[in-house]
Each structure stands twice: as C-alpha cells, then as structure tokens.
Image (cartoon, rainbow over all chains, first blue to last red; front, side):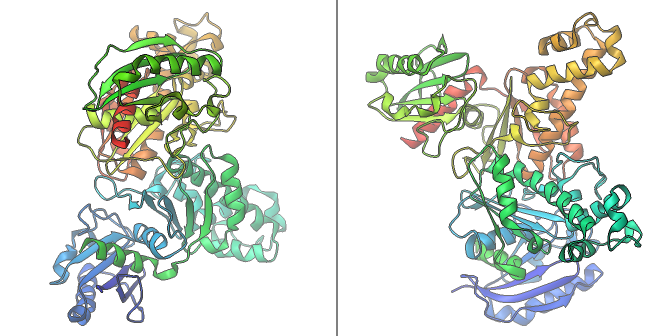
Length: 304
Length: 304
C-alpha cells in the first residue's frame, strides 16, 4: 500500500503526517509554526521531507492559494503565506513525486472519500474560517477548471448590502459569510441596531467586537449577538442557494472553524425552501482538522 | 451511422429534423406551433415520431424545463409549456429509445461538440432570451447534478438593486440579465434617469418600452437606450464573473436571441479584469437556432 507524506501548509501553522492510500494515519500528526520568509519555509519543507523520504512513496501538500493545473506550484499571490511562495517549485523539494492541491479542494476530497460525503458523486464542501473556500466534486471528480483555480466561491458576488471586501470588490460572498464577515456584520449592527444599546457589549467600540464575542453572546442569549448571527447566517444561505441551484449536489458539507457554530438543520431547511433544484442535504464536516492532509494524500495516491 | 430524430420543444414552437451522430442534418428542419394542451402536444410528438420511426435509431428531445436524471421526463412545472407536461413519460412515445434533455444543456453540448467550444473541456454556454439558461461542461462532461436539474444559473442571486424576479425572489440573475430583464431596466431607467426626457421614446409609457425598442435605440445612438443597455450589460457581467470564478472555464459561449447584440470582446475584457482565476474567452455561439436539436441528438447517440 502506498505511503504518502502529507503536509498541510497554512498561514499560521504547518501540519504533517504519513498517511496510507486509505487515508489512515501511519504517524502521529505533527504541528509547527509557519516561518515568515520563503527561504525558511522551503528549508522547513525540505527538512520534513528528508526525515521521511526513505519510508514514503510521495509527498502531498494541501496549501493556501490557487494551485496550477499540473499540481506542482501555487499560481497566485497568497496574502497569508510568505512573499515568493508562488515561485516555489514543489517538485524540487524531493527526489520522489510531489503533489500540491489547494486546501479547500483537498478538504472536499477528504469529505468525499472518507468523511461526511462518502458515496455522494456530487458534493460541495464549504470551508468557513477567516475566509471562505469551496471544493466541488462533480460526478465523482474534483472540479479544477482549465488552470486548476476553479472553486473560488468566496469571490462570488451575492445579493448584499454593498459591503466592500478585502479584495476591494463589492458584495463578495467571503466578505459576508466568513468569520471576518461576521465581525464586520457585528460592527455594522452595533452602529445601526438599537439592540446594541442593551447588549453585553454595549461598552465596547464597535470595531473592537470580535467574531468570538458574537459566538459567546449567543450562549447567553444576548439579543444583539443573535441578530448579528442571524444576518450572517442569511448571507451564508444566500450564497449556498446559488451554489445548489447551479450544481444540484447531493450534499453541502460545512467545514472550517465557523462551521461548528451553525445549526445545520436550519440551514438545510432554509436552502431547500428557496432552491429550484431537488433537495440537498447539509452536513457537518467529519474529516476534521486533518481534512487537508487526508485529501491531498488521497489525490496524490490517485495520481502517482 | 446512428440516425436520431431530434425534436426541440419550446413554449411557442416545435422544431424537428433527423440528424446523424456527427451532428449533420439528414432532413431539412421543420417548424410547427406548440399546441396549447398536453393531449394535443403528446399527439403531435407521436405523429412526428411515427412518420420517421422506421428510418431512425432513436428520438432525442431538447425541451424547456428541468429534466430528470434518467432523461425520460420533465421534472418540474414549466410555465411556458402546457399544464401536465411534467406527467408525460417520453419513453412511451416510441418503440425505439427516447432521450430527453433540457434545452440549455443540449445547446451547451452542441457548442462543445460542433460549435464555438470545440476541444474545450471546461466550457459554459449561457442562453439569453426571454429567460436565462446555462449549460455547464466540466472536464468534458455535462454537469447534471444528482437529479438532472443542475445548471439553474438564472436563479443565482447576484449583487443587484433589490429587483423582484418573476419567481418572486429578489435579485435573480435572470431578473436582470435576460431579455425581460432589459425591458424591466428600461422601465426603471425611464422613471429615474433624466436621459429619458430627451430620448426618442420620451412619449412612451415607461412600462410599454420593449426590449427591442432599446436595441433599436442603440442603432440611432439614443442616449437613454445606451444607458439602459450598459446597466443590463453590467448585470450580465456580474453574473458571468461569479460563474467564471467557480468553474475557471476555458470559454463562455453566449447564445440565444439577446446574444447577438452583445460586444463579446468588451464583455470578455470586463470579466477578465475582475475574476480571480485565469483568463476566460468569451465567444458568440455557433450552433445557431438548431443547437438544441443537435445537442440532444449527440447526447442521445452517446447514451444509446
């Protein structure tokens, strides 16, 4: 059975482990901080690989950023990774095959192969954290598009309120329905909604209210927090309806740090009340924090 | 070589012809009006089929409405077709195989196999007429979703101005970027834009201005018509950007009655200035008015 060294390269941390082609862990996942410059990062990758190289058949990266069509490098500037990340040719890091895939795509593949979407040939995983990522499985294949950059669902412009996104365009899905979007909604509501005046956060500066303040506010039934969260949830649903109408998937898998705060059944009902296609199932992700590693490893094993 | 009787069933007319598996016409396409009740329509289908049945291998329908996953019937109510259309089991119409596909999907397949998108494995055809239809080719396969209803791009909610769609939801892509959407934009602009006061249409009631008035106005440089058309074009571009960011396709093919009025190069430039994926080509459709028949025939020939 093939053995794959899987490395999940994110903006704050690097995870790695050896995984077999069934998605089972052969070593305990390790975690280390992401170096701030590209030379240190490349050296760290080389170090991790050289430590495992004799025992593995290939290396698989799940990474932030758009990955090219041949799965060898990151093809865009990725604000969370060190400058020059897109000049790194991953295939030079090892004498054995190296495979690279976008982390949201890898997570979707993990859900499809080993997680909440097993057996579903048309399924979409939406990863909601600081930003929003999408991975689309169409007829059992990962949608990558002509250049590998497909699935950029965070940049979808939705029916919104004119909010400017960090990308400087208006009404991006990510600008509303990400964790950052929730914080922004909290700030706007503090300025506009009278419920703020009686909120547990009333003494805070609106721009200092955090995503986690709102999550905490829900637990103590803070009216303002509930209103903010409802607006955020509706923005999320608006984007998901678009996706469901286009893809008619069997399921939408909700992944990422924000996912666990969502009432999945409520989201499912609201989506199904508005779509023109047949009913979709909405589920919590199951592949967990290691979804990126698992998905990348399984995709690499299919390729090499 | 297989011979397919292709029938394009639309709300106002029925087209039919015998086509071979290369998409070549073996008989001259015929046109007849769509009967108003389901019994007459079913009888017309039977009559057309029985006339050709001994010379063909199968029948292929391109039709308005969402088609089921087994390509045997229409699965939704379709306002433009007679009531009861979704209770018609097409397979009972002939002793030979009968295949049914949504007309926008069939048109996309025709563009991919014989038209403007030949050789492009990831390509999307947007049919802009009274409404908006989408056909999505992903990795050389038609995207149908779990139930066959995929591609309902007209129901995508875009960044809009709160317009209520005929489906009674807000900010649907179809509500803005269809031919009907252009008429609606014309009416709104007549009420709000001072350019209307000096327009060639200034004596018309705003709700009586038609889609074709605006197209005609462009030809004589009517300022109001140009403004209306620019708003419509930007709404169209907004929706296309969403699609391109998700699918990263090689091309977008513009089809349907409204397509020919569009400056394709301008649309392409504006899309490519805003998407986060790699550049897309925008092209006029080539398969023409018979795209539905051709696409359905070729899909049927692959299946049977």
